[in-house]
Picture 1 (tube, rainbow, N blue to C red):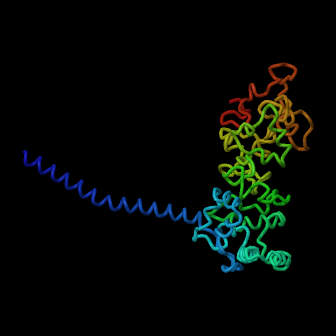
Picture 2: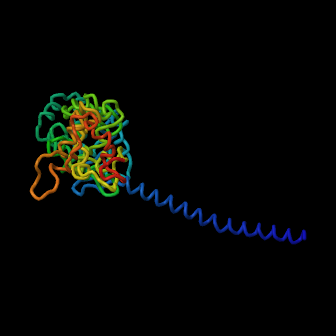
Length: 362
């Protein structure tokens, strides 16, 4: 009996050992494959663009040469996200450091080194003559952004930052955005050398940066009922794609291509058995003001009954329709002179849509 029990224990141990020997290499292989796929995806996301075929590698000298004279700019640049391109050879030669934005600086460096050498040799007159030579001075200039139009400055930034499938889809549509159409360039919001916020190199924090142009929205957010943008709970870019979206008002599309509101107000998203038509046809703004309002729940009317009566009235409607007004008419027993009928949502509580009541009772 003892021998039989011992044999069973030995067989079970051998079986477990075989299972471990088979499983470990397979499991490790799966982990390695998953890690490899993850790394491959990451490499794809950070893969730089190809070098400009018109650019000459001999015209580029590297950012260290720039820092010899431009100390302050180099110090500020070294703490921004762009610093990663300075000495990284995985980036094309024309997308590294200072020269990624300002262009090849070889002629610029040689010109100013020659002038400095003349001063050092005690030949200030010749140095002044060199600086006065407009043809040589112009040839030695690098790209100076203050002399560029908004479209030209933006084109330089989009050389690296334009949206690309699997890379950075945020800026897919910037050239068709309202900002671009109105002459707003990247440099109106971003500062490469000395940003106020290191994140995204912004010139100012939100919403103050947006308020510098959108003063009407600033006044809306100062109203009693508003989205918590001034308090810092939300940002303008939570709802709007500042780089250009494909929806009206550059709104960001939410889950399932719904409007931006439903990303937070998901309980209103449905689908419902009994849909409230305005929600689906006109959207949230048919009843609510998106930025701020003097009315509770950011409604467009001070009283709920007046908001409902914009559609559910007894006014004449189009010929051939059974109902009156835009929506179904109110029943005859709804006497608005009585307090019980002056707040529609006391009974019709599920006005965004219901799964149980076609008149949105519950």
